[in-house]
Image (cartoon, rainbow, N blue to C red; front, top):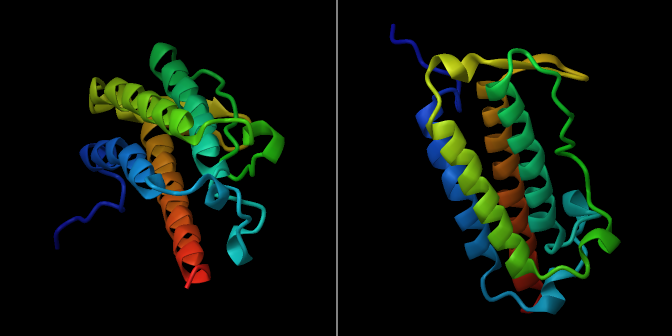
Length: 168
């Protein structure tokens, strides 16, 4: 029987998916009216508006990048917690330009993927000590980023489709 890796365990797959996420998010936001960006989500998107998603993605990207850098620069460093479940406060993002935030996320993500493209197979297993989870590897964090991207891409799609349904 052929060994099948867990989804998201192949570094080349993860790098491709991570590299595409920022462009997918930019495409999802293309052409949206500023009024649509601030409409509050409902149901499972309660507490969110579209404008908060790229802000949140940019902030978590900064945190993930710092974790990767620490893990690749030092042996088993203590790494900071990145709260991927944090819903940003409106006052944190309401005065931001979503195009600028999307561009910055795209730039930061490109830097992160370039960093990861350059590591060896062995370095994917490098670890850091997370304050709540204990030892985590570069591969585990990359997989977590991939999952986080998927969740927010689907969330943006759901919210945009709800906007389209509301205008009919």
